[in-house]
Length: 394
Image 1 (cartoon, rainbow, N blue to C red):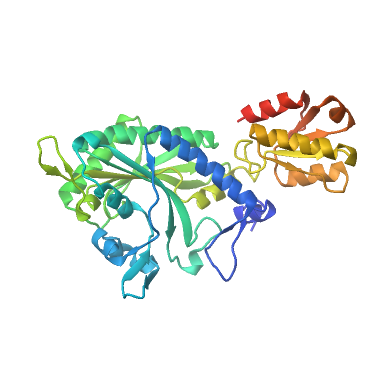
Image 2 (spheres, rainbow, N blue to C red; image 1 turned 45 degrees about the horizontal axis):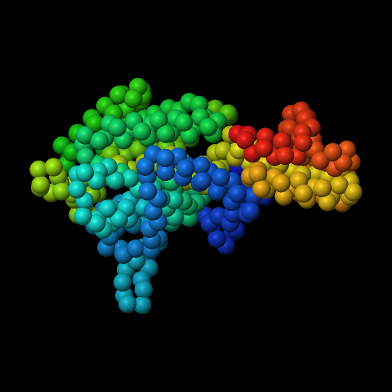
């Protein structure tokens, strides 16, 4: 394992650990969970602005639901199954899509209500083989940025275009300006008629072309209920990582009795679009750590500013600076251990904190802050101006 492997970086930066007696289960430490929440809050805001309603669905559900949806036949070997004291058969969810159909079905729907858009940080469990587990890249418990759109055929192009635009903006913000796209088509084991697959594959491909997206075709690699577009990022080391996906599903809504009142007054079954920008949040964090070598951009860093008094005489002012930064918004931490300033600078650098706020006798007297960047550049600003500048930084 080299120093740029996310497992080494995660340990060095104090982000998380995985224990031998809980394989594939992640214990997020404060710094790792701070990064997790920054990423979660970022995509939450993006989804909210696009009209998605955030929801939360159960992790433990009747096995019968998975049988009706078809997931039981496809995924039962990877599902954690149990029973309760009343003899009911239950399973931990490996994905959230059947749950979102239950939300759609909970109220009468009209064509005027569509599209209906749900988003969830879905907590999922899959009983992966122990030999396949790999740090954050493959675990048995994880959260996905699940989203589902219930819509009509005429909505598909618009919904796909919205997702592709979202995905491009998000990946660019995170340091991945380019991505490759593949259209994965019908697998040998699948649900639905050949006619519905013909239509779904053609419609998804046309929607991508309408957005100016060129793609390769991967025969047989679609989901069992529909074709999908898959988006692969290339990291700074030249490696390709499949992350985002959007899937067009003509099967699952009908299997789970989803319907709405159409414009002609009859009943119609909605289409269902599944998509995720990150996929597993843990896996995406692993990718970010490796891509950036642990030195995350300022806006993503779990701790953005290390406040370091030069001597004990400045410790009182250092706490005032820490409070001012907390009030303004930057995530700051106090480095006032009883050791030399140079050692504290080295420690902050090892923790990959992008900015140091150095406070000596002059800064304390003048109520200023000297900001030291990763590249060694420095600037001295009044405290209020420093806090405002750091709060506005991306």
